[in-house]
Length: 227
Image 1 (cartoon, one colour):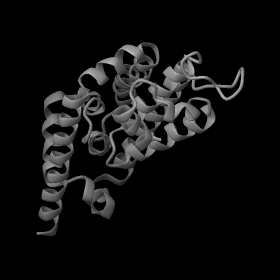
Image 2 (cartoon, helix red, strand yellow; image 1 turned 120 degrees about the horizontal axis):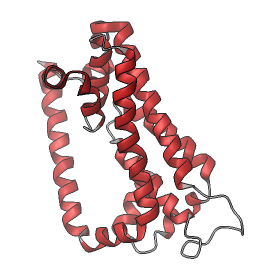
Image 3 (cartoon, rainbow, N blue to C red; image 1 turned 30 degrees about the horizontal axis):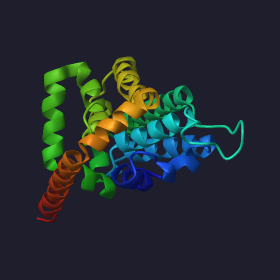
Image 4 (spheres, rainbow, N blue to C red; image 1 turned 45 degrees about the horizontal axis):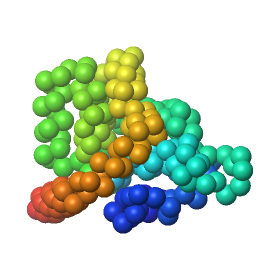
């Protein structure tokens, strides 16, 4: 679904007909949403924003049957509010799970192979710096920062940040950042996609640069781990 969303945005941003069938499969979309949020929380190298944008586009399509006809009259569709609520609870539960892992296992979790690949020495240093700088608000900062959410929430658990403080700060941050992405696309999809179409070339260049930087950092960190 994500790869099809990207392809449609690049080649067919006017109609997005290649995604229309998913807009009328809400159960599968919600299941996909929860699954991707869980995987992103444990270090899947795909920002959760990509999933949220994809679901937001489907919600926009489902709420505009005149532009994207359903397979049959009255067909259920991806609902923006439902998707936003599902996304919020999926993200919040994922963050809470990672916090609990850090609190229960402590520094021993760094010896686990998959974690070693995600949390490099540079990432650990950045997390420590931000934790010291922002205190209890660090978990909120991590929620808004792709790439450090997983290690950041682990660090909150390992640092024995009080549970109620984590729940409060992370919950507020998730409520601000997660549902808004889906709701904005669902309600202003036409305008947003119009802007994307107008500046598509420049956006793709930026995405390509970001991708190259990400791959370089992954290669550099793997070399550091090997040495």
